Image 1: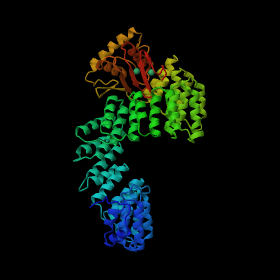
Image 2: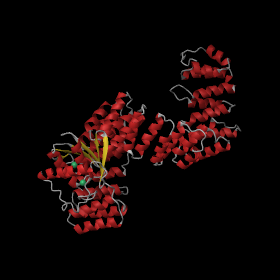
Image 3: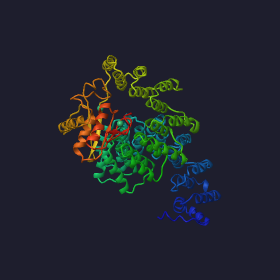
Image 4: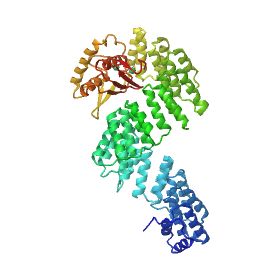
Length: 628
Ligand code: ZN
Ligand code: ZN
């Protein structure tokens, strides 16, 4: 059968002739290739009273639903439906199916109710789409109703109904209900396996998802994509990248969705080499760099410390939306390139795109890192005035940060107290951080105590407050803070640093000796210390006694993780190769000083991403100008 006849002038006689053959479906599919042709056919059917033939009209509606056209014919189908007086199950099934994936999925349910009112019995083709419509509509309650209808009409053993139910429950994160059906299915296909993997990923049980994934007899690309994005969603970025390697070794061809997950995982890991390889894969396989993939690439290069490349990729993107611009602006902010971030921000506005909440967070944090107080305030005020966006807590936090870094601590405190919304812990936290930098124990004490009341389980505030006291030489209060933290049983998150060597991520966690070369690495660090001491590093434990910062204080047993990562980087890379490190906590003062000296003595560029920003260490100085 030739489906591509598609001539633009079908003669009315041919329509009639073929409709007369009582095989209208064949005709419609064969010759109709656009809406105006469909209208001609519809018109003929009205004039020839064929519209009253339930079989013919059902074919017409079904054609609208299954349309190969780009235009949505669902509305057209609805209009035909509303004009007919006799309907059958075939027509209802078509309408239920058509609406299930549409903008108004709840319409499917209405059609189902009508169907039942007419006393027509549903069949096995009714339920998969009825259930799908509930999933699409986002209503578990409706889904449960649909499920009870499936049972009532005896279609529970039907594989399509089961598949749709598994998918529905998994999507709503009701993994128990999904599992219940899944393990009772007589025939399980790749779709239901994949639904289950997605469901486990959604409710955070990624190990269970992986067990199912490994057990599956056959996988399709959606399965791979679901598993990889499941890892990324559950912050198991290393696993996402690892699984992508498995995918390649099994000869599966990845698609854009898979690559976006892999690339954004590389961004989180700071794994530049693997990120570059993934980018290369995209280019080699001639993939379409769509908006999501493009944004992921910009973000990856920025977050892996290669901001120049991020700019280059951004400039070459075939299409850009607010999110891609925001990714670049946020990247520039993290690297401390405030002026450049502002330049891109105004360019973005010029293109006619409307900045979003997160765009403002990025721009304001750029102003803060660059110390651009006035400009920051202007932009903050423009949010509401020009864009009608009500500033959110994170934007207030940026302003507090902005004032705080600039040393305007009183103003910052006043700003927080006068805020029209109740300040949350991060807003106060920004002020506390500023008190630490500027060694203001008076405001610091007030703010620190508020924070400890707000979030008694958050270790960082005790630590910051203790630091503030110790810097103001209030040793007793500092010790008290640390005791309080111990009494409350507050645990600090373990500090870790990641370094990528030859495409493999090495994780150094404080106190963890599991790295196979740990002894060599520790000897290397001792060697480094000997050399940087000559250049003025004191790093003596007595000095750092109370400066515990976020990680454990320096001791022979507990060495801050980035020091080990630096030592390993120097051991394993050629002279002058830049060393890139990603750290989960804020860099402490001692590590910052040591890294500056390493950059000078070893003539290395070190790029460290900490929780807040990038530090580019070069020739004994840091891009943050010791202000972080
Ligand atoms: Zn440190
Ligand atoms: Zn720095």
